Image (cartoon, rainbow, N blue to C red):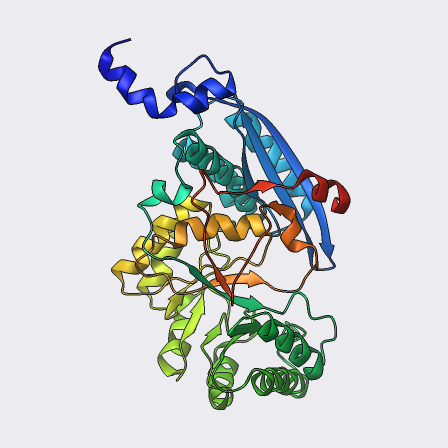
Length: 395
């Protein structure tokens, strides 16, 4: 080996030697896949992935939600068979190989793709002995602000139940709270009286949370695309007194013209895009000014690199990015490693209160201070899966 090549691989020598690999970092290939299902609650389990390599170095990812778990497990195995034996650097190759299935199957396939892609970025950070965020352009933000999504953890769906959960989140240091108070709205909007009944209930829930958190903390409302254009415009007006941080996903993402009309009329900022896949999906959404704030989900959009690309399109349109992602601590950290380097990053979603043992799932345990996450400077994601916790809480 020439002297220049020796110097090139010198920083990697400890990791490669320690792993027992006899080839350089450029030759490391994917060898194995572990999938761990963790029981959470009625709204869905967490599915965590771990890829092993020929260098003995592993990386982790999150493939939670987005569709039936059985279908996702099948797709994880299917995509892994494509990736097995290939280089750990084949991120774009994996995206192209999996994309036909993603376009055919939707979110369940996108989540499976991302659950593998995240692992590759964790591995690459470890190989180069740097935090993964350094591979995405470095760090602009010293810490990441999170809002507490209380929707998945609120079992008592009366206004008082939402208010109590919001108060718990505030006690734990969060100063931004989100709920989806219109989730029981019927999809058939033909019965005007029934629609008004659930609209009124949703507004009462949101009002109860505003009263519980006070006027100075941020309140975020997700409508989960339950309304049409006319009712969406009306709802935006009726929610004005609550001084919202944003109003999210009032109507379906397609056609984006409906959301754009609501965005133009609404006094509060609007946000959305959580279920859109890829840069091709986001480009018309952003170009139409469907919302003020784009919300790609690291799982649904196709992975960490795709999240970075989407954020760049939004940056060119002077649009902030606030990634969606109510999932496990692994998914939160993976998204955060992209977010710390985004000039247009605003805030990140945190699934609050689903299980008391959430911090235990990773090592070192997850820790947010007053709603802020500070990423480790350890290589890769800076975390590993806690195998004892996985065994204790697995499905």
